Length: 231
Ligand code: CA
Image (cartoon, rainbow, N blue to C red; front, top):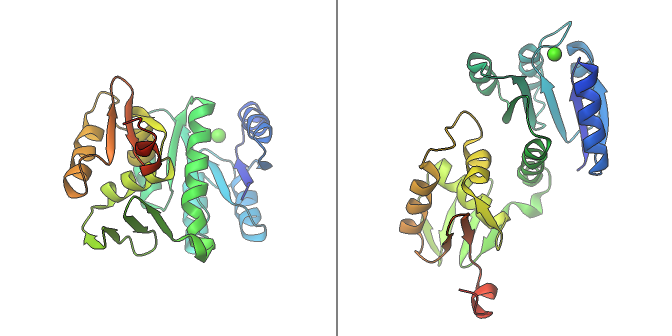
């Protein structure tokens, strides 16, 4: 789960990405035009594709369309010029999983890569389709949630938010991190949407499942932490 194909025709950006990601233990392959990206994605087993939209020979959206058309399901994060909203929307409709607008912070890209690889895992390994924590079970394939053995109806956003909390239980997650992970792009960082959705989850599940960490963000509380008397 560490092979990344970078599709980027600007050598400086490609080498910046390759260097940073190799340092984090990923195996990197670089493709510099769209035709190469398609043939490499079809021939090799990659775990994730970072796809620049402005590529020679075949642009990124056409690449995306072809890969999804051929049934290639690998996670794809699009790299695009700032504020190209039309491209973003076209890409989402074309089956991309996430977006980064250039210029971006490497740490943010890394967080999204990790998230996408985590999310992608259950589809390939059957034994990891159920997440459990604190009387909760989340079935990642059927999107069913039970709490104390009762089925709970969650919207797709609520589900993804809860999944993010469970995957990072015990960690304090900032509003920005949650916004990035769950809403992904194009949201005003000043928006209170995270708070609103945390409120929904508390209402549908339990009030004390997600703690507010003042001035920082939110934290999914597990029993062990409670027993230690931290909360
Ligand atoms: Ca380019």
